[in-house]
Image (tube, rainbow over the protein chains, first blue to last red):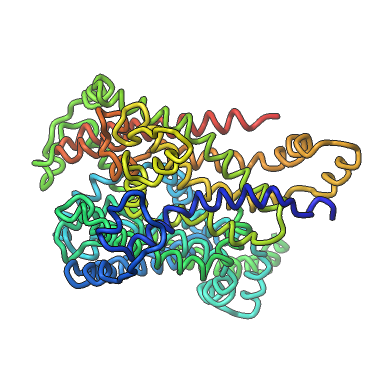
Length: 273
Length: 310
């Protein structure tokens, strides 16, 4: 009891740290509502004097950020659903089933966990170009449909579920696939939430691959578009840039706020510790 | 003889039933593995092998349609990479980034986790969410904002420093502070990951032991050092290994903030590798990527060895 009593000084330290950490985001959001004139003011202002949504309307009207938003969303959803499904399927098989090649597959999964992205980058690029997929949406998601990390995470989670469930399902006459899809998968919520959030975030924020593969405006994702705006002819249009950054960041913060409880639970139960 | 014949059907019957079950199990396992295995082979395994092959050849961008009609050059690309002063500079920058950045990130993450876990009772999830926000945001968006904040004359950071009489440097434009700025930014962006994992690890700490030690007069520092930290050893190892692997590949920060400048002071090994890819030197880029991989493997093994005992 005595140990868990709050300490006032800790609140002060944490609050200062909290402000330091989120100041860039506050500044971004407030700045996105300011006019160019106010953004150039010295000393800088905090609260916008004449709040305006002009920066956002230019972003969507003149620069078709709506299209990029759509691209980012489609790619992230496809990548996330595919990872959730395929990684949990293999993760379960590795945890509870015996089948030929099991050891080799698990070895390959573990062996590639640590491989840097740049190792596979060039051959993936060559492959996508040779398949004639450059500048298409599939090129943006194909290399990311499955990831060894997801298999590892799901396997760890399924290992923690009792094998008796499998035997019970068999005695009840359920098919092997039915046991997975109807018994195990519905109970994997926390692990799926963790994997889903991590995968969605990684895809939404992915930058290098889409930058290289999507060289026409039609296939830009949000980070690519923002990076090109920030280095292009609009690079001193600060309001536009901060509005663009807000459009990239805010949806992800909202999604995370909604799912964070499951996410934290998932981290605690999936054995990433 | 006759007993053997008599017992055979009896033993075979259950075996054949379990054999049938084993076959069904194997079929299900293969079926569940199939989609992953196909996608993984095409988009990861094959590229891993192909880039290794590339790293021993003179592959250039012009060979993109005929990736196997190239000449073997043995270890030339590796020798070229290791002999390149710019690559060595990039490797040094990466090393500094790791050696300073990893401990800072771990300490910040651990401190935040301990404070949130036992130090306070209210607003826990608000702080946790705040500290985790930089982790989930796009580096491109972050870079846009930080470039403004770090502007030498009108930026927020130097404005605040000016209030207390400090003449802030040109953070990203000065070779003395550019790499440091990126390290601070990386710690800001990543300590939340460590915090979340440490928070999970702290659930295993035996708090009764803490209370007993407190009664015996142990200070909170002593209790942290002798009770909490040993329990966190596996968590610590996990955070250390994953952070180090991430930082050894550090790429996006210099790519969007400084383009590796000024004067290569923030050029990282991964970024230089990417530049070689951009120049079309696929063989050299492949060799550099594999060198990074080799360092990752060695560093990971060393970290496991060092933390295993005691």
